Image (cartoon, rainbow, N blue to C red; front, side, top):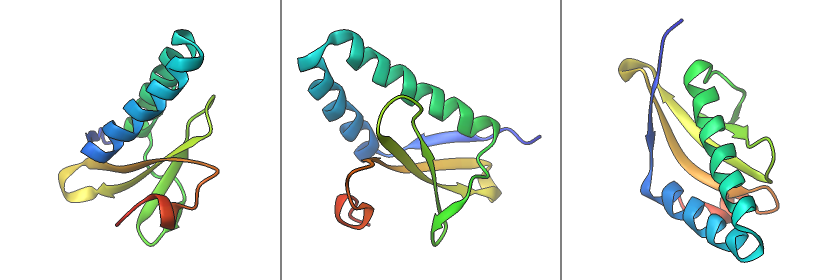
Length: 99
């Protein structure tokens, strides 16, 4: 099976930091657990990125313990996964993610 590299957009990094800062006000442990959940989702993508296409060419993977989804696309020619957004599941992706 082909191994994919992952490119994470700066917006995703900012969204993750914002979410971690929020959870940090509740508990540092919860904030750390969010980071671990995020990293596990990224690891799962590298093993099998061929999840259901949700929007045009954008695919999604939910985090397992937190109400967020990673929105990503696959660039087959570069064997790369590009993660475009980390969006809370209560938000409308069209409103939360400026394309």
